[in-house]
Length: 259
Image 1 (cartoon, rainbow, N blue to C red):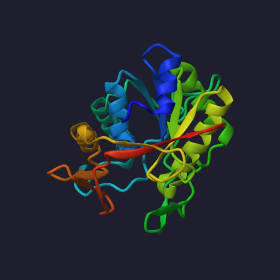
Image 2: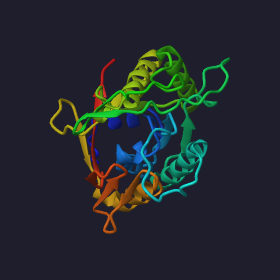
Image 3: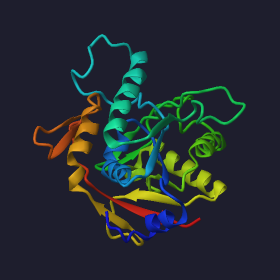
Image 4: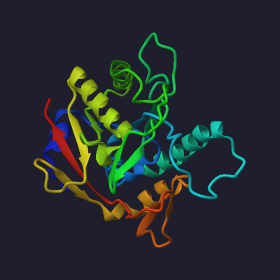
């Protein structure tokens, strides 16, 4: 990360350290796959990083053999929670919250667990809504409720910057799109700067970060998500539960969005 980043530089000038950043992701493992190296870099620079995860990823495909064959479905959220705790520690994340669970729950509302909405592949690299409908899912919930819960997390963490996905949700997962839509709305409502993760290095206004020095931290974080992926022995890449291979994610763009 370059020291002349105008977004982070301006924020560091505005307030005594630690700078506080709230990152909003849809599922466990997204924090490592999308921007994990940058979160580790921010931590090492003294930034307090808080992570808000919207669902437990219940609809995600499981790596064969990652859990015993007789594991009941109701235990998967507990397993994914444990995986996320390990990943967050490896990345240096200071606080981790679940959307709908206090303190990330609007005052006066009973706690709830937003479920993974699921997805289907439209074409290679682009996802869309699942063929089934879960009334308890993140995308089935009213946008106002989701925004109010994010605002509750904002009130606790008092971030200088909120970060989430781009308007495509990265690769189109409906939960990613909803997380971006709701977190941007919450940021606007609270008057807090917002930035989106992007893999488009050429997009206008993008701050590009190449962070190979955090290979070990990212690899360690990803290894905690053993139900979702397998990291190569040489840490060059990983294989997802669906069989897709990708290089270890050590580069990411951050694009400020003006309100």
